[in-house]
Amino acid sequence: MGLEFLARVRTTSMIAVAFAAIFVVTYVSPAWAGAFVLGALWSLLNLVALEKIVVGLTTPRQDSAAMLRRAGGGAALLFALLAVGAVLLSRLDPVALLVGFGVPFAIIILKALSLVLVSSAFWRRLTAPSGRTLGMLAACVLLVWAARPLIARAQEGGHGAGTETHPSGSGVTELPTFITLIENGLGADHPVSHFLHTWENVIFSLLVAAILIVVTGLALRRPTTGVPGRFQNAVEMVMEQLHDFFVGILGPTHGPRYVPYLGTLFLYIIMMNLFGLIPFMKSATSSLNITAALGLTTFAYVQFEGIRNLGIVGYLDHLAGNPRSVIQWGMVPLMLPIHVLGELAKPISLSCRLFGNIFGEDMLLVAFMGLGVSILAFTHLPFGIPLHWPLFIGLALLSSTLQALIFSVLSSIYFLLMLPHEHEAEAHH
Amino acid sequence: MDFHAALALGLPLGIGVAAIGSGIGLGGIGLGAMQAIGRQPEATAKIQLAMIIIAGLAEALTIYAFVTMFMLNGKIG
Image (cartoon, rainbow over all chains, first blue to last red; front, side, top):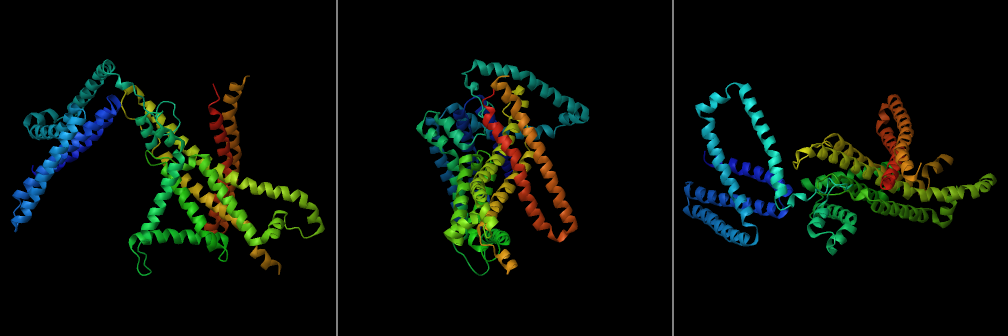
């Protein structure tokens, strides 16, 4: 008993409130669930403040000023909570708020009762043979099972809030994102949700870009050439690996020039791919528009670098297949269209490959999640079996990394094809 | 056979046919890479990189069929 008991009550109430909130969102309404969670939070904070006061007043210390300050802080928190609670009571559903407020107290009472019960002789005699315990558990489960249709009927008799369907279950082919949640909250006709729906993929790609920029910016805020901190060290390690990797492909003379572009491409794509595995997030690369933009950027940069490195004449010569003899000149009408078509096919194949893989991977996850939910649909519980775990999550992790690697390596090979062929020149002379 | 029935038959079949092709291709790539690693274990990193790239290219063919399936999926029924 004592402080440890309070801490355990806190943990248990948090878990209980989280589980109960899932049920309340499904069966009653999101607003009610919000009020319930806020009420529970209010009550928990109250307990924390009380604990602070008691601990502050009872712990023996050298200076009584610090002790009083601690207790005073707790009391101030208590009064602030009282004010917040009054505001909440006037705004939200008071019943939900009070039910949430009561959760920790109910748990305290239940815990105390169970402590008394478990140590009693009656309980020990009841649970001594394990067969009897199992039988009792089975009876409890059966009882709950039998009560379920009654609850369902009560739901239907209620205010019809249970008719809300889950966005993941009803023929929607994508997992819900936080944008879907906002749309559901505002209604589909609201201009904000229309805007969000139109720009969903762009928002997610910009989010990823912002994360990358912030992380790099934080690492470079106080850069040191001496012994770097842990964070700078990690970022530098990634940079060095990428640098060595792409320079290894492109060669030491031309390589460093393209490392910033290719490395950024790799990091950006892998981040976007992996973003889809976070709940309520989405892979921006599962939209063809985003991958087409990436493919076109690479295409334009490759052509620009070709012209810059080879000159206009050299570039056209390259497209014509470097004709040197009469036979090769005769082949030019054949080679030129092939090379031009080959160049044009590069962005298409790059973007379609990335899009197809990531989209397919996401569809796979959606299909198995939907299956996991529909298996348990007959129980009417807001749960499913996570069938996509861990096999398909692992597969998605693998293919996300692999596709980012393939995209950036193929881009670097397109750069390599456009660069002056230093190895061939050495071999000829 | 009307349009819907043809689609409903053809889309899964198309994925299957594409999967046969890229399966053969992936098998060949894996065979070649494993043999090359067996001959020259010191070149493993280079061979693996090339293998992954070519495997990505071969695998993409099935993915194209898969994407086509998803694009035309809504027109069935």
